[in-house]
Image (cartoon, rainbow, N blue to C red; front, side):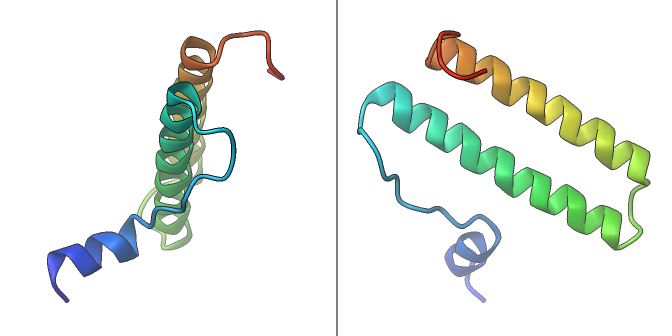
Length: 80
């Protein structure tokens, strides 16, 4: 499988549906990366490659990074 096909399989990107502003597009990209990384962490945990506690800790760190990016990109006034 060529690299571009492999990348598309491993890191699928869905088109954005909403108001196309720079902040919205930036946050959407961060949200999609979060989703992809959580999926990989879950697969590693389900496959016995990492412990459940480590998976939880990794996902919690990713969540905090996503939340911080939301607050810096979109502001704190929207649904927290």
